Image 1 (cartoon, helix red, strand yellow):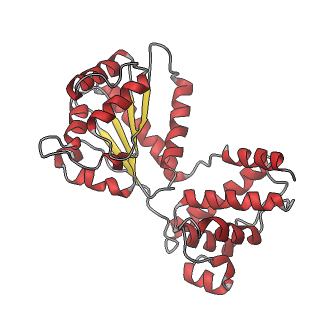
Image 2 (cartoon, rainbow, N blue to C red):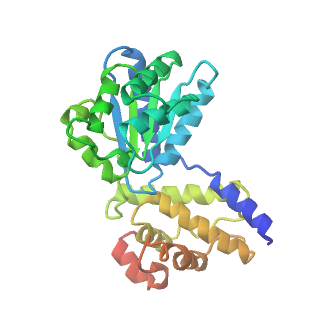
Image 3 (cartoon, rainbow, N blue to C red):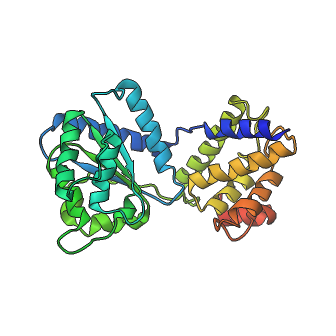
Length: 308
């Protein structure tokens, strides 16, 4: 198979979105925040945090929610239903306001003091009927310039002003952002955090197996492969958990690497051989894991992961 065809099939794989239960839960809570915001417009709004390890699929799940939401309530020249911004490292409260104004298309987003930018942001939310603000990589805002300019106070005031509810996405590093300011924490609904899967728990074993099954079926449905791969094999599931440390996005990425390896040898499905090579070529060099469980005795792996 030539590189053009391999690239086409990898691109098809990247289009796959699995309705993973924790992600569905995030969608449901986001929809609730929107409805609550509509019912309490003009009064202090609520926020929600969704924290988890890198690779948990938080951003992908949120983009899927936004896609579905905008299909029903599209963005127009006069309406911006959802604002989604991603923070860069060491972002300040002012940088957050600039990012929001940029999303609205403000050509002068960086002009003015922090206070004037905040006023313009609030005016944009009201003018364009924004119903939800989503801030991704919130851990990059997790520090204070001084005792009098804590960024958590800026976030609290955004909610207090009653303009728009907020979803905070980020890694566990952002936990201190919410715990150090009790007033901000008091304005949040229950967390929708993403925890790594624990294969000692039957519910988590079912989540991993269900995800692997749907991913397997989707590859065939998309035409990536002609037949189902080995992803549902108990030994493979145990290895996928060991490599990913229970973070579902890493499972998907490992399968993508194995997919490319399998296509290059003109295979009609992914085999354990391809997954083993994917660990050696991607997971170990990138520090995802230190060892390759696919090269161990299946009995030892199954015993350790307890998924038999």
